[in-house]
Length: 260
Image (cartoon, rainbow, N blue to C red; front, side, top):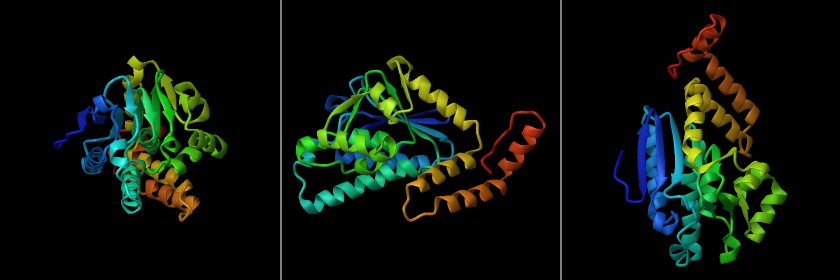
């Protein structure tokens, strides 16, 4: 699975768990950690045995409590742009992955941590989770896609409020706003994520990947989402899994999908 300084990777039953392992720093995202997330996601793209992904943070206090402030304090205008663009690219790898990625949010998900969670396809939060984009407290704005994804998830007005006040919200409020899919007791966090992934992994892999692609197309200003959907529907109809799925339905049996 490769060697990582700031991540722990574990694969079981087709599910890769990526743990940000900097608990003494509240799992803050420094440059090296973001680089390692890119390498881990590349493994997800390349390894056919990986069917789904859980991203989480080590310890009970934080999913990811933000970026590394010591590094950010040294940024100039020029390298700040590169810093933001690199993070956006890597978080885009998560969002565009054709395998389901769930954020298991334990504790604080602030700044870059909230942005990392939003890049995942779904978010499951423990009852002790807190979400926020407090960058204005540092004289900054979100730089890893937060200004774009937060309004899409919770609406323009509330996103404006959270990003301009820097306020944190609870897991329950995040669920009410649509930022998270489920709120569960801390001890149920991983079993819930695994159950969701196992259910998804029982479906046709090509169809799952195309659902992700089509939903992402909704928010791509340069893409005709309806045409993407029609094209993807046609691709499904040309697949072996389509034949298997329809035959299994008609024969009243469980389908055996192969991703072909």
